[in-house]
Amino acid sequence: MHHQVALVATVAISFVLAAVFGYLADRLRLPALVGYLVAGIVIGPFTFGYAADSALASQLAEIGVILLMFGVGLHFSTSDLMAVRGVALPGAVFQIVLATLLGIGLCHLWGWKPEAGLVFGLSLSIASTVVLLKALGERNLIASANGRVAMGWLIVEDLAMVLALVLLPSIASLSGGGAASAAAHGPAAGGVWQVAIAIALTLVKVGGFALLAVALGPRLVPQLLTLVARTGSRELFTLTVLAIALGIAFGSAIVFGVSFALGAFFAGVVMSESHLSHRAAADSLPLQNAFSVLFFVSVGMLFDPSILIREPIAVVAVLALITCGKSLIALCLVLLLRYPLGMGLTVAAGLGQIGEFSFVLAGLGISLGILPQEGYDLILGGAILSIALNPLLFEIAEWAKKKIRSRWPSSMRLGATNLAALQQRLEVINARNEEREERQQLKKQQLVKTFPLFSGIDDHALDQLLLLFQPMSASPGDRIVRVGERGDAMYFVASGAVEVLLEKGTIRLEAGSFFGEMALLTGTPRTADVVAIDFCQLLRLDRRDFNIFMSHHPRLRAVVSDMARDRRQMNR
Ligand code: CMP
Image 1 (tube, rainbow, N blue to C red):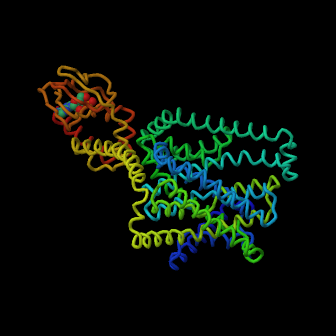
Image 2 (image 1 turned 120 degrees about the vertical axis):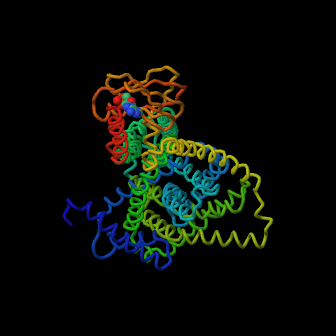
Image 3 (image 1 turned 60 degrees about the vertical axis):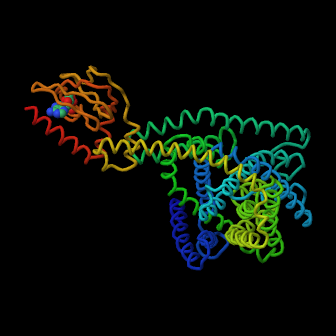
C-alpha cells in the first residue's frame, strides 16, 4: 500500500468491512460488534491477504475511546458518581484486588514471575468502557440505577488504572524487572521510597488536574460554548465541542500524565454543567459511533488467532477468569454491600469483559520487560473472546434473574432499602437535570407563543435566539428609540406596550410585536421615537446578532422586511 494513503486505506477498508460483517452478524442474530471484531481479524496482520496498518488503527481506536469517555462524562456528572459511591467505590477496589490475585494465581501455576502475574492480573481486572457503554445503551440501561452503578464502578476502575500505569515502571525497577525496566528506571535501590514518591506524585498530578477541571472548567467551558453558539454556526459549535474534548484529553495527558480517556471524561463532566450540553452530546454522537466501530476493528486486528491452537487451555482459563471469575466477584461484592441481586447481575454481566485499558497495561508490561509476549497474546485473546461473548453474559444474567424471581421471589427483595435510597438520590439528580431542560424548553415555548413570528424556526435556532436576546425592562415614559439616531438594535415586546410617535399620530405596539427593525435593515437613521407607555419587558437583539441571525434565517428576514415595507408605506 502506498504509504501516503495508509490512513485513508485503513479507515476506508475498516468501515467497509465493518459494515459488511456487522450486517452479516446482525443477520445471524449476533451483535454487530462481533462483526466489527471479525472485520478487524480479516484485515489484521495475522491472517492472509491484505493487512491494514495496525499502528494507525490503534491510534484511531484511541480517538474512539476519547470520544466515548467524553460522552460518558457528558451524561455522568460528579453528583452521579457521588450518588453511587457507596457501591461503586468499594466494589471496584475489591474487584480489582481479587481479580488481580486470581490472575497472579494463574500465572503462578504457569511458573511466571510475580510481577508478570501482577501486570497480567491487573490487565484482566479492568473492563472496557466502550463495550460496557454499548451493552448498556443497547438495553436502555444507561440512565437506570443499575447502569449508573456499573458506569461509576468502571470510572473508579479507570482511575485506579491511571495509578497502576504510573506505578508499574517503579514496581518493575523495584523487583529488578526486565532489562528494559532496569535500564530505563535505574536500579532497585531505594525502591520502596521510589514507589511511595511515584504514588504521591501521581495523586498530586491527578488531584491537580481534577481540581483545575472542577474549578475552572464550569466557568470557562460554558462561556466558550455560549460565545460560539451565538455565531449561529452549527459547524463551528460542533468543532468547538470536539476541540474541547480532544484538547483537554490531549493536554491533560501531556501536562498531568493522566490518560487520554480520563482527560476526556473530565472534559465531558465539565461540559455537562452547561445548558448547551445536550447539543454538545447530540453533535458528538455520530463521531462517537464511527470511531467506536474503529475501536472494535482495531482490537480484531491485534488478535493473533494462532494462540487458540498454541495455548487452548490457557485461553480457556483466561476467558473463564474474565467472564466467570470477575463476574462472580462483582456479583458477590454487590450482594455483600447489601444491594439487590438484579443490580449484581447487571454489573456482573457488564464487567465480564476486558478491553482498551488492558491492552495499554499489557503493552507497558511488555515494554518494561516484565510481561512475556505470551501474556500479551493471552490478554488479547481473552479480550476479543470476552467482548464477543459479552451479549451472551447479559442474556444469562437476564435468564438467571427471571429464574430466581420465579423460584425465590423473596430473594429479589434483598437490598431493596439500599436500592431505594440510591434511586432516590439519582432521582434528585434526574429531577434537577430535567428541570433545567424543562426551563429551557418552557422559555422556547413561551417565545413562540408570544411571538408567532418565530413559530417557523427550528429548536436549534430558538436556543440560539435565547442566547442572543438581552432582556431589558422599560417604565412608562422611557424613550427606547430616538428618531434620527443610528440603529444599534431591534426590540421585541414581551409584555407591556409602547407607542411609536409618528408625524401622523401614534401607533400602539403590544406584547408580541417588534420595533427598531427599519434602521437595521436599511442602515438609515431611526424613523420615529418609540416610548414605553406601560411597564414593559423587552428583548433586545443587538445589530451584529441581528445581522448574523437573519442571514441564517432568510424566511424570518423576509417576514420582518415585509412588515418594515408596510410600515414605511403607511408612514408616507
Ligand atoms: P426604526 O426606524 O429602526 O425605529 C423606529 C421604529 O418605529 C421603526 O424602526 C419601526 O420599527 C417602528 N415604526 C415606524 N413606523 C411604524 C408604523 N407605521 N407602525 C408600527 N411601527 C412603526
